[in-house]
Picture 1 (cartoon, helix red, strand yellow):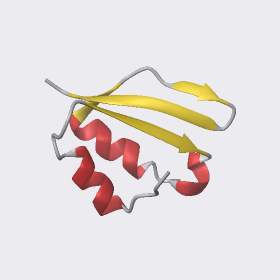
Picture 2 (cartoon, helix red, strand yellow):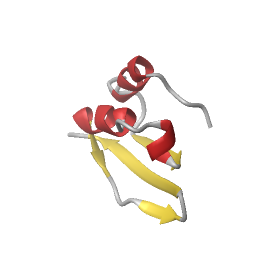
Picture 3 (cartoon, helix red, strand yellow):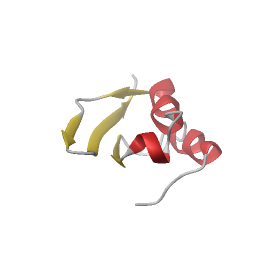
Picture 4 (cartoon, helix red, strand yellow):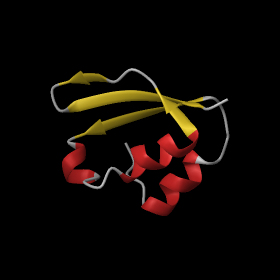
Length: 65
């Protein structure tokens, strides 16, 4: 998986492209300690049910309507 910079995260979150974005993270406290991508997504998208397997998490984000 590709890691995003904060500006890239904001651009993707606000793009309005498609419906659902799946956020897959591994040890997010190391790779995104400020939760910049989930925060950017939550500005314009509704988070879905979080699923977790050990240190891997998957969460869908849908456009708010």
